[in-house]
Image 1 (cartoon, rainbow, N blue to C red):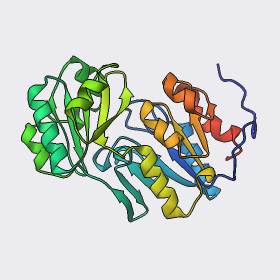
Image 2: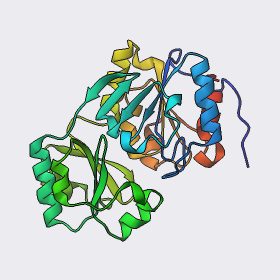
Image 3: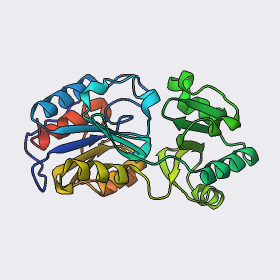
Length: 269
């Protein structure tokens, strides 16, 4: 049952001029190749009011094209490792050879499922039951490939099968990396100093906007860093408890048009 939404019932510290949106679990269901109709409506209405709208996702260019990218003025991709505004590249932080070597050695010694992402190529190097469970809606996007493929194109991000509590073990074997969790069984691996927060901060600087003028929407632990660099943050009702704990506000579930309703409460649409 939908709860009543009262326009302008929430407040932001300054007039909002930019909005950053996670996709999976926020604007769309996890793995679904389309945005919710209410998400599309919210984006259209925000942009009509002059608010800059940016996707902020763990996805990259190769698997975001399925969405209506024309609704976004900018992109924070690969958890902040590749950021664009219009045709301008604002941030680009791919894996160094040292990190690729560490990932190669880790993958050789481990039986964990792993995926790798570059601008134009997505692939998996090992699959497990957890892999098939999580990646089932997007299995065709991650064909099985040799581990040597990681050296054939610029890799910005990897995802590794990792249960809660196993993070320290992985970090001990992946020097120069940090982990951001996006589901209970997988974490994304990015260079130290990365994350959605780093990307959002650089986009705001490029736009000449203060952090107080930005709002972020998300549901996963990988959204926490961008929550911390925006004046207002909104966690979906289906968000992880860790994400809700640091959000300014908690809205309805993605199934209940959480983003659209939050924009109403904030008086943005």
